Image 1: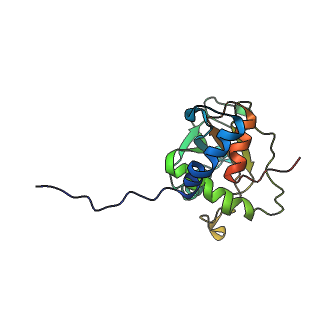
Image 2: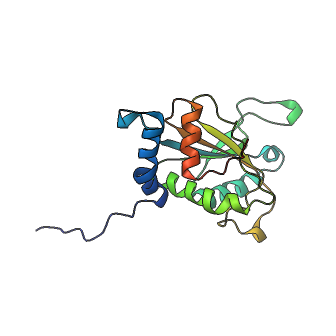
Image 3: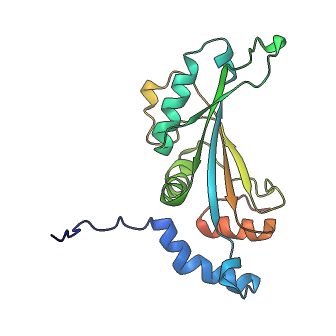
Length: 191
């Protein structure tokens, strides 16, 4: 008995397709890269939401987990306190944050939504700071609230929660990383 598979492979994310067809050749030409494997690419995206108030109210972490799940489409990992700190009324093992690591197609879909939908919805947005690279081509920036993502219903938000987004690239220098993200559509401020 033979089994036929009639299901099609899922469509390639729009941003990933653009990367392979337009951005890779452009980066190769810009930096004079001979080996295709040395062209800068995306490795992963980490979305981190710190909830310091969860030390006093344990229910706040559930809201952060729900928001991160809706935004990224993946269940977050809850970060717990490593040490007790009396001044902050913090006990070892208490939940104090949530983070998600995105790879593969989910990463590409998230970045596409971030660049094309979420960042333009920020009030008084002047662009991302182009100087927040870490020296190895990775970029980290913070957002002050979660309602700019259309997956989050503004009426059901109990409080504003900021988040840090880290884009990890395979670039070796900040210039390569900056060029890659600029070509992907990241709106950097002009110097």
